[in-house]
Image (cartoon, rainbow, N blue to C red; front, top):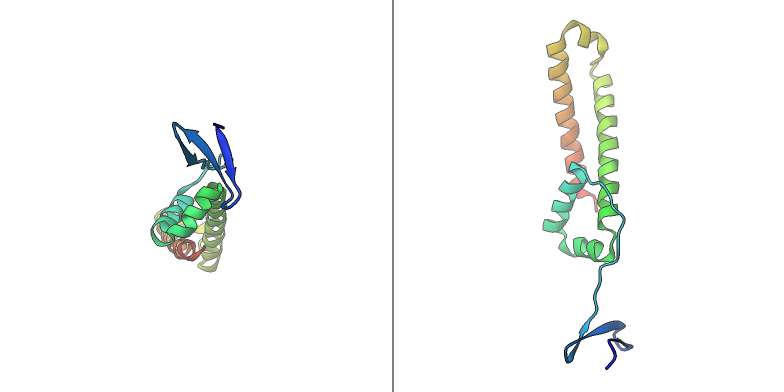
Length: 126
């Protein structure tokens, strides 16, 4: 008996295990990607709310590349939002020099709002 056979009717390869042929399923190799907090949050969101999309990305070998891309976009957008909100509200180095505590408080407030915006957009992105 052959170790591997191909079934034209369903397009699958089968591997011989003992007396039985079982479907030979292998997940394609994927590049190693570093995924940050935003990518992990989006992964959790996909797992809970869009399991079909999550499994499709996982089994096609595209999940970690997709999550790394989402993470990069979110970090870039967060930096941009923090900068824009700080400019709009007049939070600058002069305030930092004069009143450090007020500057820290304002920047923390801005960062929290920017993270909230990113979080909402990230959860809706598919």
